[in-house]
Length: 333
Image (cartoon, rainbow, N blue to C red):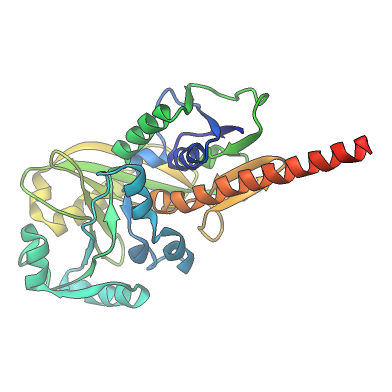
């Protein structure tokens, strides 16, 4: 079976992996000149289904609980299973309690236990929540590694391609995110920045709760830290705003004062596609399978949705072949 996958974000790449694993001949097209520049490129890479349950439906846990295993199997060595730490300053203790009530699979930590997990946060927080079974990865390294792996598996990549010719493909899968022609989608603006400092060390993503601007800080290689992210109901895909940048910097400083002297190495903003309930969908419409609507859960939910898409493609192909065979039998009779 020959399948065209449109879009080389995390959705398109995971779909291509599931199809190639099932021995389909896959071509991936991407309008950009290479990997990067999309919402996936700016993601935090947190595989945190239980934390995300605080503001999402139970389906996020159900669909995302096996994401770390999928990424570990697909890209050995890329997933860091260090858990997630959630903290709040004493004046926001009610936020931490509310977070605990809306989530599960965590345990409370006292001040000494927080210091044991993250020595650089010693004496800064009295209580925290630790989600030990969560994980994270570097989205950019993961996407680049997945392209390399898929190429070795025989997947063809066509970058800088607008609307490819559809002839010669048995199935088409649209994974183009906010660019898809889907009136049910809306844009949710996500902003982020990257800091670099040698004066702070973190082993895992840390979420700092605040009633107005909660943030997460995710450690990356070479003393870099990704700080994000906003969720703004907007179709504006312009640069990060001054307000968001100030809130990120203030919150990072509140997590650890050494971030006040950090270098700002990057800022970014992108539109994340979302349906009304903020849950992704796999649809079959007029012969095209669409995989879209990941909201803020791209790397977490993409593996489960990619499996659904691959199963739908092969099931629909089987049904089509059965219909053709029945038609041939009718004609021969």
